[in-house]
Length: 341
Ligand SMILES: Cc1cc2nc3c(=O)[nH]c(=O)nc-3n(C[C@H](O)[C@H](O)[C@H](O)COP(=O)(O)O)c2cc1C
Image 1: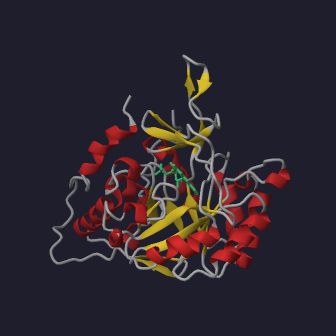
Image 2: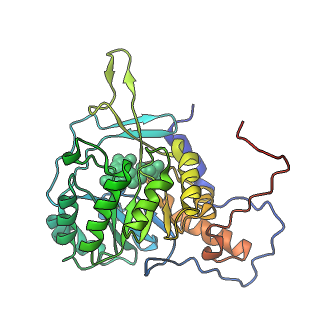
Image 3: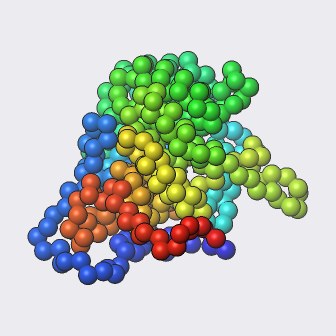
């Protein structure tokens, strides 16, 4: 089975080969800018929360000014130490992580991390989490004082300590509660990042939209686990962990496609994106922008290669990115009732 690193070879080919009869690009220059809840991004490619630190850690590796945006590591009102190691384990075409949302806390983020991010052309999206609705609101109130944040992204994959550990993003009522309270507190656009560990993601997507979300990011990681059979111990100290990387891409893509048809607000698609073709699939399925996560760990230049790959594709197809969004052509089936089997 391929490991997550095997995907690196795929990243090198940054634009799908021409397989059609489209016109030569000529002098057509596509617009690859996108707008999400009133904020313009110079291109539709962002880095995903938790896989790109606070941006500065990658400044010696790539030109951050070429990114559409950076979603920083999840921030809570108070600093958090995270889980004990081992916290990461590589799987076939993916990785498991249970970092435990380690972060510097909202106040130190404003003092130590935001001044650098504000010097960039890439937009800054701050991922926010908490264990009670009041935690989320408190965190946003602190962040509201920051200069240079463009949007908040609410991570609702956290267990609510008041509700016996029920995860916010698994329950439409809790989702509505935390989104409505956060929206009231936020002075910036509010994106809500959905958990894929649900039966029907469109139910949660509609709950977030009804409660005032300005955009939806999907998806977060899938709950998984791995066991060392020699010691009969879990590979991750937390026992269960979040699965990310190319292994999850087809499921994430399906969820983006379904959600794009269920809500009116913009969608930011992510889950296993490692190549231009992956990113194009999410845009065609209905995402207005994409995020690159796990690929940053083995190929930090993935996002900027994807930016150029999207530009080249749009030039060749004589399309602006906006024309691509949700442009999936579904052929009419010639059988009466099609199934997946
Ligand atoms: C090590 C690690 C840490 C993460 N931390 C966060 C986080 O703090 N907040 C969040 O919303 N998502 C977090 N995620 C989830 C990613 O942002 C992303 O949703 C997920 O990994 C799927 O995308 P990918 O397959 O491209 O990695 C984390 C993922 C990884 C691998």
